[in-house]
Structure formats: C-alpha cells, structure tokens
Image (cartoon, rainbow, N blue to C red; front, side, top):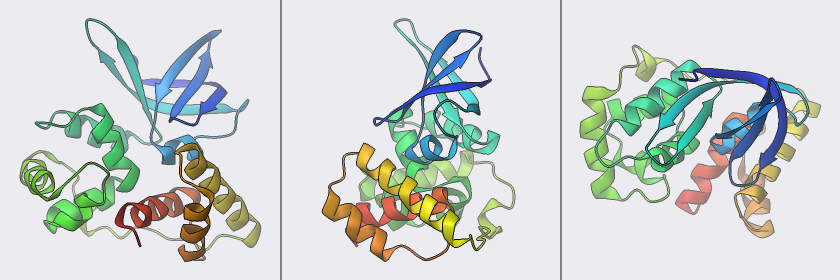
Length: 202
C-alpha cells in the first residue's frame, strides 16, 4: 500500500487531480482544491501523504498535505454513507481543526455548508463523527492566522482565483467572493473561506 509520494508535479487538473512522477512513473492523485493549490507548482518537487484505496475494479490514490488530514479522511470514509467524494468535499470546506470544532459544537449549519449535505445528513454525521473522530484538543485549539506580506497576499488571491476557476465558478462569482475575503490569510485559509461563502450564498 502506498502511504506517501514525493516526486515532480507534472500536471494539476481543474477537477482536483494531480499527476506526480516518481521514479519515471506518473501517479494520478485525487485531492481537495486546497491541497491542489498548496502542494506546490507544476514542475517542482512535491510531497503528499496518501490514502491508497483498492477495489476489485480500480485503485485510487487520495493525497493530503498533512497526516492529520489523511487520518480525518479515513475516519470520514469509514462513516456510514460517506464515500471518498463526499469526504473530500467535507475537507474542502472544513479542515481537520474546523471539522472537530463543528462536531464538538454540534454545528449542523457548518456541515450544511458542504455541497450535497442537507440538515438530516449533517445531523447524522455529527452523531457518528462524535464517537469516531479522534483529534485530541483539536476542537479547542485556535487556528493560527499570520499576517502575510502584500506580495504573498497577491499570490494567495491569485491561487484562490485559479482554484475557483478550475472548480467551474464564473467570473462574477469569483470577483464577488474575492472582494469579501479578509485581508490576511494564506492560500488554504482563503480558499476554504471562499468555498464556505459560495456554498452559503453569502
């Protein structure tokens, strides 16, 4: 079983797939929009933690920037009614810390921000995840927010714009959501914030 990959990023597809070359072999890796942006630039060396799913008819690699994110993904797909696509959608909107906080607070509205998750599904997930999610202190640990330099902020917003375009959002939607984003934050934080706003229609 493959647990991680380190190699050259050959391609980053709009649908959330990375092509990573390791030892002359290209591996197709499914990722969240946040990971797709954060992992690195095309033609650079990248590293991802991997969940290797094996079925009778297919083998699929799912990539993550941290072990904690991979562990949460594995908890999610082990939950009744949650497949890999929904697990990635949840992690696209809520990182491990934010998800743990939502579960601890029984925040149905937070899970309803995930595309395809309604109130009944959100309520069921909260019940199941409360007994399955093992993130010590995550629910009470604040998310660090550092002030980035102006040039870094411009790069981060450009990355967010590219990621949203790849997900199929229109120019007007992207322009409006970028205008509402906070001044500070790295690419991953800003992208998650943008996806939450787009999902909630605010």
